[in-house]
Length: 442
Image 1 (cartoon, rainbow, N blue to C red):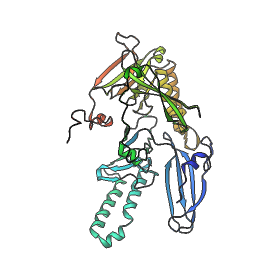
Image 2: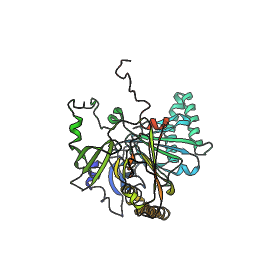
Image 3: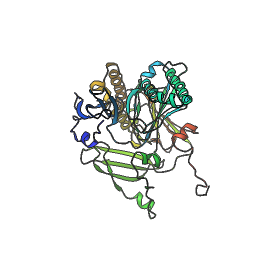
Image 4: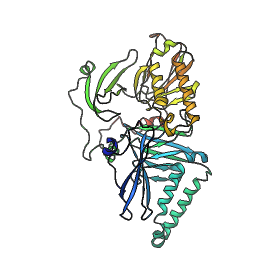
């Protein structure tokens, strides 16, 4: 199957503009890798609800009937990796859509089964389709194994039977998709509500993972920080460094500054402006270390003036609105320093305005109505017509909501400190972090 360069895709020579409503597949003549005659490759740029754009490619050869289907991400490698853990309990769970990038690792812990990264092409399938593909891959060379090594062939046959039994949903199983590129996806049928069977966590890539993704050269160990940096001087100046626009990938500049938040701590605010497409974004990083205890802030919104409260949501913070049964996982919006009204607007943009599920072929009447009702409730909260509770749960303890009564306690806000669980420490990368004696030789 011929390879289509990203330059051709992004340059518009293969696909229509991303804003076109009537997307049509593009057919390209390409060589069949089975019989080496010419076949047909069909390419389609499409959107997955609550996810992103992908390129679906399908090849078929009329000469030898060979066919092949795969997907590629139409976007850039994400800043963080992603790990989906799905507890498959019913047959309906087998119908969930799964985007597995070629850099992703798929595991079924109950069978001690793992599909390593870069051993399969990216695919758009279901959970059941993923099981079928794994079983078909193991079945490929069984005839030769039975002739050369019958014992190994029998063990593989036994394992294939276990994979097939998973589809019968006897005791259920767990599917883990871990992708350092951040471009894999498992469908949440209950979106925008929380999926009790699905947990999503994000993580920082290791040097080895960056090297596998081509983001770092094999001999690149990273640059050492400058020895003469003065923290006091950094507090009084705006640092500027080059980057790429997250929307159009054109060269842009990011401004960074240390800011002290009253009655809290120091944070780093970064703002990016793109002169090419006009995209603007800002992000907040904690200026200090991870706190010893996690922080859970609960604010009861009782007055429209509460919408003007300053909110610092770190990249590790989750947002809950119990009255709407809504939960936003950590890392979904990144770090933000805004007002409560601004946070509501960002949530609405994420779940509705920028959601491909409300337009085009991906839309369904039931889900559109649910999303519209959810957006109306967010508008009522912003207008002060609906009393709700905002819960900011940050295991790293780096989030903050303004106390308008400071330095006195706020009667509408409670701040709870708690000890992180093992899973939360694992998500933050603290379990394997060595802070004492790390310079000692082993």
